[in-house]
Length: 322
Ligand SMILES: Nc1ncnc2c1ncn2[C@@H]1O[C@H](COP(=O)(O)OP(=O)(O)OP(=O)(O)O)[C@@H](O)[C@H]1O
Ligand SMILES: [Mg+2]
Image (tube, rainbow, N blue to C red):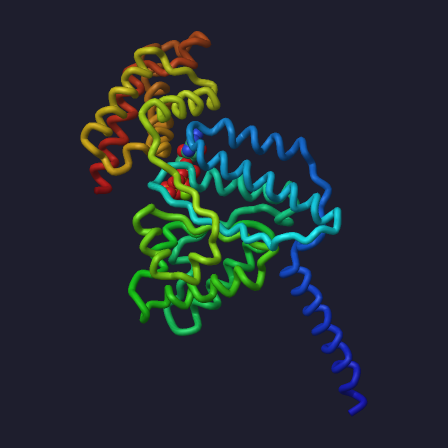
């Protein structure tokens, strides 16, 4: 019917447009080489190198950088190139740097031309798994869509296998496997979680294992490393740890190690202690001087007492949450 014709033409055109858009999205940067901003890459790698410890993680990321750069050069020479599977597994306890490193990975791969955007969407089971049949696919696809062009970081990914075959987590795993195929050149998925749980998850999901060839382990930090992290955090906030303050923190961290606290090598714990100590420092200053006149030194230095109280508050919170 003539009156319907324009609409039909429009919808066919819209369909073509949609298809082109979809193609562009899933094609990503395949076989095209973006001009590389070496300065930006060096800046990001400097940030990576400034992280305390994590030698193996750093080495692997440097290796990936070399691989991608040489691959780009080979493409420019018209040589054959391996398709890149850069999906990763991060294994480690809480507070060992997994989220921090995933953000660096996103930005690095953007500068290397692997990802168009390089942003990180951090999700967990509740963001992906639905409550009724068909709901999971919608939820998972929504998160994948948000992450396109960057990194989809799934925390505690092993929990997707919870509940066995009847659980919707399985549907989510299937959806993820499909997404990593469909958006091979436009999305990096990082599955993260405790080492033992992730090992079991991978053993029972061979489809995942074969598609996630890069595995990084994030060991617990040693007390020496945690102290270094604490000093960096304090410096970043323009404070300073007094000698006695540092000793008090060292004693507390050693004690955690001695009692075998499961999250003793945890940099987030250190961050919490520092943030609480900074507040205790403020309370101490105001309570000791009614005139509120302080030297620069006094405003900067975290003393033993501040650290002890910061540790104590963290300890109390830990007990409440146990
Ligand atoms: N190697 C490091 N050097 C300096 N700071 C670090 C390092 N690792 C972690 N941190 C700091 O410790 C805090 C926790 O790190 P992050 O959030 O990356 O841990 P995570 O492994 O993702 O933990 P979770 O599994 O609980 O999410 C952040 O403030 C981060 O900046
Ligand atoms: Mg994290």
